[in-house]
Length: 420
Image 1 (tube, rainbow, N blue to C red):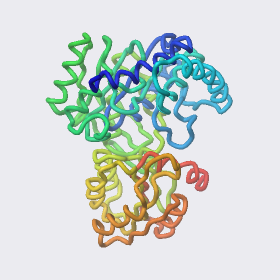
Image 2 (cartoon, rainbow, N blue to C red):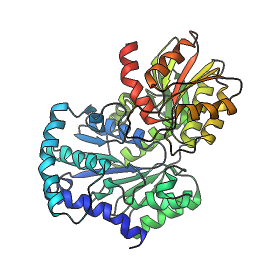
Image 3 (tube, rainbow, N blue to C red):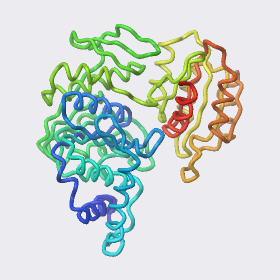
Image 4 (cartoon, rainbow, N blue to C red):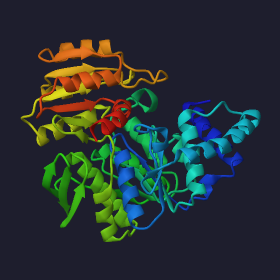
């Protein structure tokens, strides 16, 4: 069995379970499928806001969840209730028993099961549109089990999950382009010609129209504050409740996709204005300014650094850092050097014992070498780490929490409640 045949088993086993459940994936009339190295979660949430504003009942599946597992599944901006979650689990359990007794495959992964739950939920609630964020790669990701799609989106290509989907951008692009398996409109903002060629080749194979969206030099930032960004694009003004030029790029991609679907102009504007993007340069406190950010690869950290430098170049910066064990963190730390942090508090990126985390002491040793001027201290507990870091800040300083979706998400619930 070659590598592709081995990976194809992942889709075969999820299809086996969906067949037992009566194929909820075939009931949902419209799909948008989103992959990419950076920005895919933001694009999903922006598109959901636009479609919901236009009157379409719209579900979105995001991965991973920021704080609570029920945040993975939303309909029209509202996360799945705990009661519905329990009902869906009760529906899933006997199907899993049948799967265990009859399937020629091993057990499905956590991500695959959350995808099945999402499809069950969206079918049960009769959504008009389902927007699915790829978990990893695309070609063999569980979300690629959907039988058709209206739009496939590849935001961009960078080096992430290299141990799973490839150690070059070209290999990664091939895996992500695998979401193009039916005729559908394909959108990307990837600039590199060689990567575009890989995507276009997949498009040609499946008679899928290719759309390259250019964001650079097409917009004007009218206002940028801690509460968000106002920008104009093609003589239309939009407001984003998040920070950074990279989020403007994500918004422009969502705008162009919505236009291709003939969504009403006012719904697009209002949808962008109303979109909420948790843990994406999310300001949860002032005096000091505390920012929760989910950047966890070099490209995302670079965008975070550029945003901080543009927003408040004179402010003293303090960092709370936590990373997954399998990340190449040195390039990210070198990028963070541009912020000249006064203090660095290192912690586990999550207190979930089932995830492999970079040990805080190991991270602190690296930081002390790369940031010799900063005061660095490790903490085992993320909650203790954030409170220690806050105590080091003056009123007008910036405290940035970054390095992991899990760290920002784990601290979000406590911080938003604490500072409300």
